Length: 177
Image (cartoon, rainbow, N blue to C red; front, top):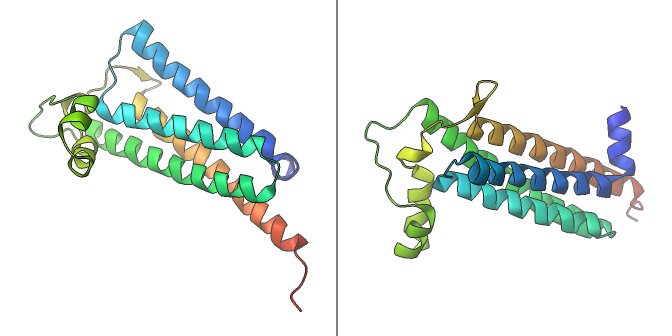
């Protein structure tokens, strides 16, 4: 109950914390890339874009005091978290059940530059050989597994925030005449 009270009283702080969590996750990804030396696959890059979108949407929502703004931006952020979780789940699936033929193919930017978007997006989501590789793990989970967990938790927190915000708006609304 204490958590729900905190969410009810400080939704903008919750949104700011979600934004900071996204920035921290992006920093972890950049650390793994530039310090540890891991090269991100196309699906990892899509997940980074989802994190950037999530950070921007929740950051903007926390900066806006009008309830309509933060509810709308939070709903968009929840959709973005769902998209990120879907991509991470797909990558986890590829890691658990790798494709029969492994070909590294083009990188993310090569796909975007060489093919129309309608053809590049399915190629990215199909994954490539390097999307199925597990180059690093923590407590038995790959980066994709942890990414899915983070997106799912942030998405659930956003949905709880939205449910509480909408419920609170309904309770305060005057009765129709």
